[in-house]
Length: 337
Image (cartoon, rainbow, N blue to C red; front, side):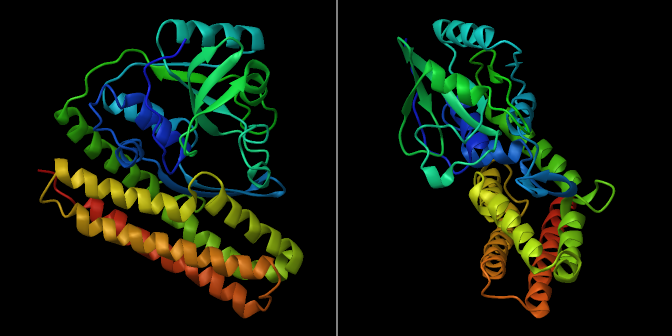
């Protein structure tokens, strides 16, 4: 059983899966940047009391699953999304989907993916891929961050679909309920909705843990980490930030580049709103995140260790917060035509 499906490599797993699942219905119009932007994928959150791999929970994108759900909802596409308590029922359901002609998205754990290089395997359970067919006990897998397709046997697939730990996928499977045609007007309205949602998420969530306030708050905290946590633990916290920023999916800087590309493509549907000019601000933010990651690496690898270096790291984030605040406030002020 092999569904007519074209694998396309992407920068990030969920936005890539979303684009690939909607590619046919949209006539190739729902690119990865459009899926990411319509799904309001850009975010930042710092939650110190939740630990992942012995470091604080830090995320540079919206919660796993939201990009696909928001994009489909904005485009008026019904979705099927299921989790399972039984591994047997999960495989039966997957097989039924394939028989019925549905390529399906699956949430999986990274650690046991057989085609992942060993140095990229760690316990992270919010990766996404597509299963689009099977040949006996082997399943055809399209992982959008890989150059080509892969094959996993039923045991390997079951193992990653039921990985244990934080964000355990529990066999999570999702797909569009029907191959519904997507019109340009639907895309146009979905772009507006996605931008408005992302503006709210980055500017208006109360407290100082999320959005641009969260970035600023993290920058201020970093300046205190050396004295408060000690050099070794502070270095590990910065390593956690770089891991979440650069190694999980596309990372903080990469997500900013994708959002900039989204605004450039959105400008085709909504010209005369200055979206291309605003996209350049996000490119600048992406550059700053990458520069900050290099500086953080110098600290946790022991090349940099003074308080001045921690202050400089904190200042990078304060500058990034100011840049992204300007970008989202500019988007907020648009009077849509």
